[in-house]
Image (cartoon, rainbow, N blue to C red; front, side):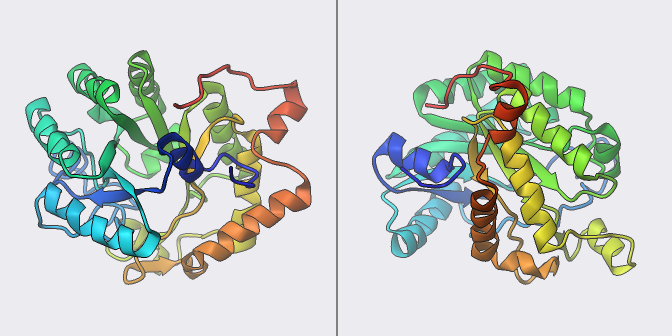
Length: 318
């Protein structure tokens, strides 16, 4: 097992499957309610035209061919033995269930694919879609990746998310009722949020007992409304040392069993405007490890110190 001071998702996969498993990102041609929907919005502030900076996807090919191309890369670079098909850009449940089933089945039919991860928004999970996803959970290894970014409604309004925190709680409850594994996406460094607001999001994720979490840093991409704000000088971005400290604070407040899928953001080099230090991904991750070691703490340490143990008893993802 890993010697990390947090529950690393990649180690969970290795233990669960008995070998190296890597995600292959898939663009299945989805959009989202904030683009071309009924809300007359140009998308979230941070989202680029390709869907939040999805990297390394062979767009324009059928799902199965995208996966086959990804398999070649993952096998060569990481000696991967099995793969998860990750439906990543935009809202990958925003379609009729018949169409969703066809796409998910196409991915699962590819040799070496042992499971699915489906990324979406809280407002794209009606009951029939949740029932469909529950069927895949029973059939294969499955994760629902649910974009939240913050628990604070003023922040969600600023980001033009088009939903509030109550919508997330409703979607999360529906997923829990169906025993789905849920990985929640959050962002550190959002405008208007200080340390207290960001750590309140961590406390709430611990209270809910989320199975997994992706912690992103706010990064600015070309072609986004956020990029326009940055160019005009109206946006402050976290420095590397600030982010490392906040990430450690956040980890200390999470439930000890929550799987950490990501600890930093890594936008495409050709689109990234700021912070440029985020390109040094391994430097950031190593610095987080070093800071936790310096503190003598680990994931969940703050909760044990404050109240003697986790507030919410949850099942471990299996």
